[in-house]
Each structure stands twice: as structure tokens, then as C-alpha cells.
Image 1 (cartoon, rainbow, N blue to C red):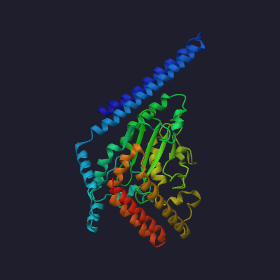
Image 2: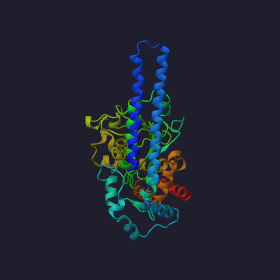
Image 3: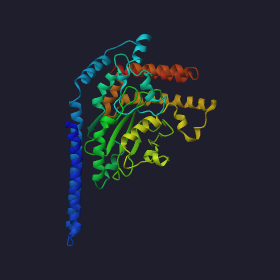
Image 4: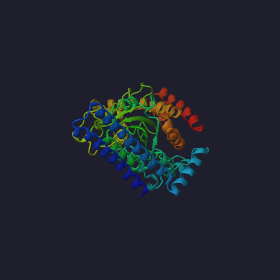
Length: 409
């Protein structure tokens, strides 16, 4: 297919850059009489060629994204148009029988692009299989959600290397060379994102790649259903250092309420992400980064399925054994705080101030999931009211804010 040709062209461009750079680098070492000025000129020429090769890769990646969008199947495009129209039209909550019918949609309608994110039976994978947790809202089936957002799942953008646009922008500007090994590996990974990332109403991941600095990614991980992160848009910045893939990527959580919220024992308020795959948390040898097989997609899926779990309190190693009533109470209290902050920062705040390159994704997600998310917040409030009326009241107040914001989209 044309897409496969483009992917091969990406690898070929990287290989060509490798060959040219190697030849340029070899010339000085075989010329004993090279003067210092000539060596400096050769080195500068090598860096320029490496930069050109990387720019070529970025352009091919952009063409791949454009191809995918232009060749969207007609039926998917029709479903997308219908879903957009349905989401834009006001609708009243369905009667119980209609809601039950929606939850009983055929399993085929719930097929996601890529692997299910959750490794927990009570997590997002189970929600997709069973249809629980409001996986489709009135006027928007799971198939329509996928049809609308699939063209937006992966894209190449510009400007992530600008100050303030990305947590690791300075790291890119401080790089002294452009490693071809990294460029080749990233080209392959970007080309496979479209087929590997999960996409469904219950759990999705969206990625933006900087077209001029492919080592910078920005991603949104949608919190899986049946967790206190459900439906929230969590923004992460990825940086692939010059040593990549021999070293893992660096990942920073942006959604922290300005450094005020620790969403998980593995997600710190300062943005640190603790994961054995990233080398930021101890783990068995098989869980650590392996340059031959580990990928950025695995990191994204691990964040979604291993960190964003139904009871994150127990992600803290010292709390794992608290299976008594005291542990259950502590977990419930922990979830209350996570739910509130999920609505406050991963819904309201991100909807008010979405990342520019992912704004269309954020708006589309909340438009299509409006009824399901409003019902979910009400359910959280009802559940918490028996233990903490203040918590329930805050959730309902934020629910009204969310409803107003979505109506204005």
C-alpha cells in the first residue's frame, strides 16, 4: 500500500542519512594531513547533513499522517459526520430502557484500535468487554466515537521545541548532535502509532510529534473507565534523549494542577512518572527498559493500565498488604481526592486551557462523552455523599461547570 511505501521511505531516508554521515565522518580519520580547520569544516558538514536527514524524516512522517486522514474509509467518515451532528444537538437523558440498550451494544461496536489498555479485570479492558460504565453516550456509539477521533489520534505538529510549549524544549536546544540511530528508531515507532494506540470511549491515547524535532512528543492519556481517572484528559510530555533507544524516554506529567496534585503514588506533583520501564522505579529485570523490544507505546499503555488503576492507593508498595477494613477505608478516601482532582484538572482545567496541538481532541472527547461523563460525576457524588457531603457538593458544583463548558463548544 501507499502507506507501506511511505514507511519504507522513512527508513530509507534514515539509512541514507546514516550512510552519508558515516562516510563524512570517515574521511577525516583516513586523511593524515588534515588541518584543524578542515576537520572543523568536515564536522560542521556532518552535523548539517544529519540535520537534513532528520528534517527529511519529519516531512515523511507528516505525509504519513496526511495520507491516513485523506484515506479514511467512507463509512467511517459518514459515521463521524453523524456523530458530530448528534453531539452538537441537545439531547435529554434517555429512559432506563434506552440506557440499558446502549450498554448492550454489540461487541463489534466496542472494538478499539490497538490493545486494550488495562491489565486489571476491573479496569478499562473489562469495561470495554462488558459495556459497563457508560461506554457510549446518547447519540454517540462507540463506533462513532472512534470514527470522529481516529483521524485526530496521531499527527505531526510544529512548535513543541518553543519555550513553554514542552517540558523538555530546552533539552532539545542543548543537543550538540542529531543521532541517526535515534532518528531511525523514532521513524519506525511513529509509523506504527496509528495501529498500536488504544482508541475507544473507555480508554484512548493521542499523540503529537514535533515535525522539526521528532524527539519531542506530547500525549493525552484518557483515564480508563471504572477508575477514579475515568474520562479525564491527562497530558504527558515525552523526550527521547540522544542515547535512545539504548536509554528509555523521559516522561513528564503536565496535568498536576500547577504542581499541587499528586494523582497517584507513581505520579508526583512535580510531574515525575515512576515506572520501572522508564528506570524511575525499581522492578524485575523483565520489567525494565530493553532497547531491542521496548517502545514508547509500551510506556503509554503502562501508564494507562498499570498506574491508572481502580484503587491507586495500593500502588504504594507499603500499602499493598492492607486488605483489612482500614485499608479499604484508606483506599476509598484516596479515590475521593483523585476523583475530585480528575474533574477539576483533567476535565475542567484541560477543557479551559487545552494544549494547542491537542485542543481539537479535547473538545471532541468531551462533546462526544458529555452525557456519560455527567452521569459518572453524579454517580461519584451519590457514592460519596454517605461519607462526605462536602465532597459530594463539590463534585456536583463542578459537574454544572463542566456541563456549561461543554454546551459552549
